[in-house]
Image (cartoon, rainbow, N blue to C red; front, side, top):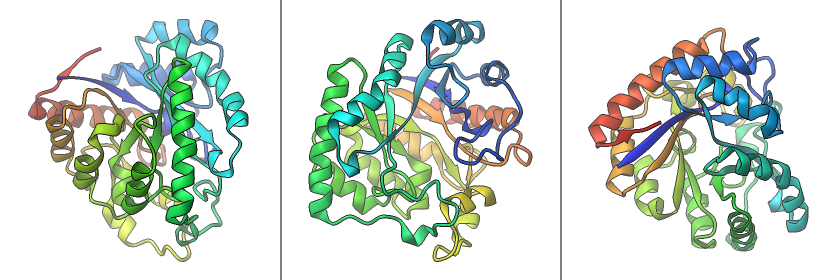
Length: 299
């Protein structure tokens, strides 16, 4: 089985919390990621949206686009509008040969609202999720038909956060909606990270290897503290620096035949956790667990 290792620029510059950003250029970010051993990077706010400009920059550093976030609004409803909104990113990703666009549902989400406690996340009924699942499936099928699939990101402080919510979305959507599996977000939400793989492995098309510091998470007051408060306190980190057993997680994905990208995505304070050092630590741990699981890491 083959795997590719990527990283997200959120460790260098945070798109939701500008204060959590290193003063580094895109070129330096790519250089550090490549030096740490990664061959792919997801996009972020300092990436050009024209591949004629971006392509030569990536080539200079031996990095490819391995995904990137899209702030979706389909929970609020307009399919035609979302097709128009995703089109520029889709065109860029097709030109870049990216594997997918990461779809994050931001309608009603409180993930970017510092004043909104975790306990006030949006909650949907099963009927709501049933209708949403139909819409998401139609959108996913359209995106794939255009030549760029999406991968749905379950996420803290969003409508689909918990294991039970993800189960319902998978139940009420079709194979046309692939899943991004994020162990860190699922652990933060109180889910069983291995059980989720067992249940939904057939839909997993992209993997974020986000680790968590459970000591930080367990001390949060969810009635008062927000998702961004948790990030500032250091809830997330890279594999090998937190509480999750990535040997077990990667091994379980391998057991179900997953092949593709494993992307380190760990937002934290770059002054406390220097991104280059954390990137090297995350890459070292991933190489260790990939070998244990029988993956061949390819560029």
